[in-house]
Length: 268
Image (cartoon, rainbow, N blue to C red; front, side, top):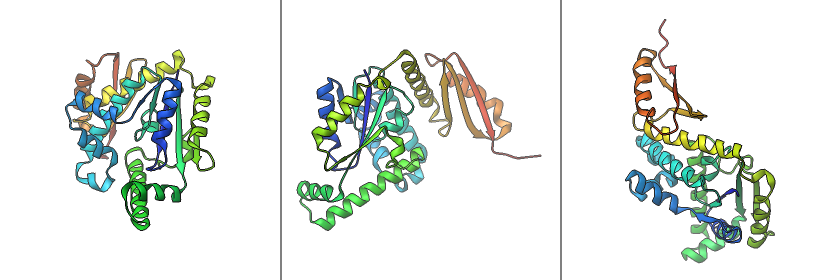
């Protein structure tokens, strides 16, 4: 049992590959479902969530923390679904949101630009120039979004366990390769890898509690011990620590809260 994330640009046949992989393995295949779940759980419109995951950073410059809140909602929704395994996720940022979980196989699908242009022209009924400009803008926006939110270029091959080029490799070839790889021993769930996933879930749930009041905090969790780090004036350390403990303490699974303040004032 494992989890597969499939990252792809537009018109790269990643959705088709994801659906066929899920069908062959008997896994659930999701993308928009994460938005629907987060929308219901946190009472926020699906449109706002979609914009937070798609719009270029410039759109959110005046609403940075709003975007962080929506990304936190989606992160939490995906992690909680990942608890059940047997999952193929082909939405945005799956490889970021499920990072460092050993039984997750991260795949990147790429396709030739000319093939993508042809598909864009056929499906959108536009000329070649229009199709090219649309694809270039889409690719640029995704790259800028990834850099802004996660600090990494989405196209960096080091983020993935495999990168498959759909050209000489067909969709069915890619499906066979992914299914075979997903069944390798190193991508099977173990008690240790499940524990890592549970820690990530706890981190996400804590982040939800803090994102409105302390949107830029860093949260890590290990065996129920939650570490929260944030920048703030040192004079506010006690007040902030108490407030964070009150917000986070009641979260199920939290045994201890440790707060680290990184001073923003440098008074002698």
